[in-house]
Length: 178
Image (tube, rainbow, N blue to C red; front, side):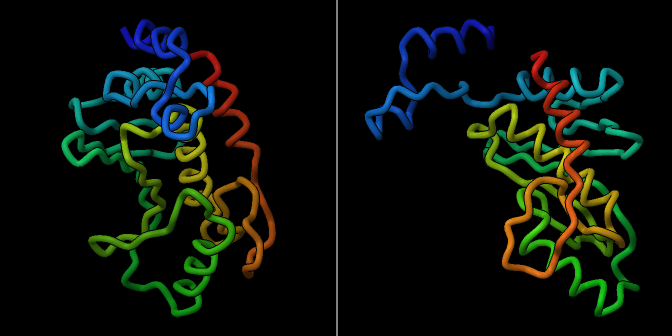
């Protein structure tokens, strides 16, 4: 069904952005829970879902993906550590990383926990954005305390330096199968 819908978009040669801007660029159809489930299952065949929330593992790191179709939101989260005993230096470092090396993923604090998170509108989310966002979120969790990076390019102008791109490349390659 998703492939048929996508083929119709391609045959019509139109997108919402293309109509608004008058260009012929083709984009993916809106992300649905069914499509999101297909991507997650391809990345982790052992993933579990209750229909709105998915639990998966990427490189031994547990990831939770929470969706809200009514609010058109998706959030991928990875718990890192308790936030209550973070030093001012650690707090400053995660904020610095949010500025230049976290990119699409972010460090966040909620419920006394430090999280790595990727948040995006659901319908506008494209497959490679989602896969890249997952990889960046896992990388943020894995590099907490050392590089503090999402693993993609550094935006620059900040205080961070080193990069870790390896996981993102592996996940994007795996996502080509979809």
